[in-house]
Length: 232
Image (cartoon, rainbow, N blue to C red; front, side, top):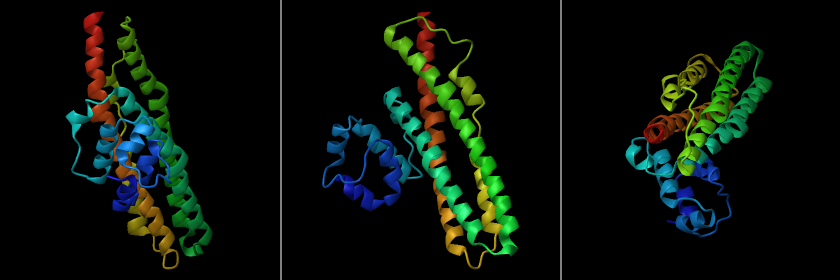
């Protein structure tokens, strides 16, 4: 399949392919050709795309067969997208709504903005914890496996992370509800719709992201930890 045909099939896939370092201007090149040029595991790329396009599709066992490095790389790029693109885009639209709204709705929109800022900060903290604590731990496990070294876990296991994994989607659902049920905007309906589109996209993206962490990354790392314990 040509990469251009994939984008025509569903343009929502653009942020996903960008996370693999794929940018527009790829002409009529096939997916396999572009992946080869970018040193991307084609099978992993195709599975990630299929998961994103099909809500009912999540081949957990198959995804666990891919390299941990591929999985980590995709999760890290997703973090970069959430923080540097998506969250800022939503906030800009909310500020635009505040700028153009009538006085009757200004208080409600300010409340929505404050709610969003609280959610944004919570999500960023969640992401930073994973970037600074969990992903380095996984890399430490991989290094010990690769070099056949003794592993010091400091009494931490990836299952500890899973047990305390924060559900960041619940507050996002509440934010959408506030806008849908209580924000009456006869003049600024297009901007409010754009905000909702962005929030629904973010919610879907985050759910897929959480599935990759909990159903793919964690089980794979658990097996690696068990391998290290047997060696120690």
